[in-house]
Image (cartoon, rainbow, N blue to C red; front, top):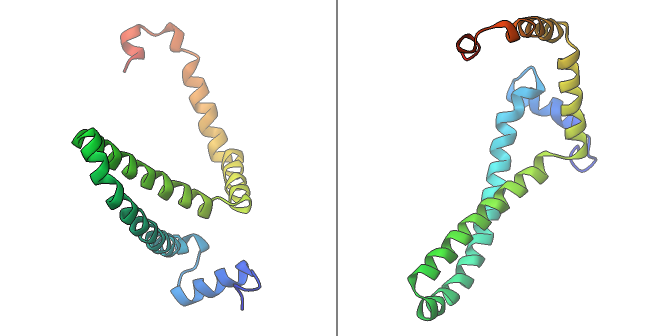
Length: 139
């Protein structure tokens, strides 16, 4: 019911309780694994269809253009599969809400006192860079 109602906060709490973790980020390995399984099943389904179609075309391609054309077609197919996996994962992971949450985390990190202090310390080291000999700059 929680998934049907899209109550993701309650889903997160329930998963945390069932997995015995204290922070939502500790669920990421589980979620990555689940997404991998879903993507892999979808890929295998698409790949099976593609192989059936390719099995019909490759012999003709080989007889007309030679084995180099077949190798190039297989390479192209592998690239298409990699592109599909990448775009599938991006669509799954990066919704508007996810991106907004990630952006908020980055902004909080940039505004943290530790980060500001590290930036100031780094800026102070650059003040004297122009006066250093080239071999010392390169270290």
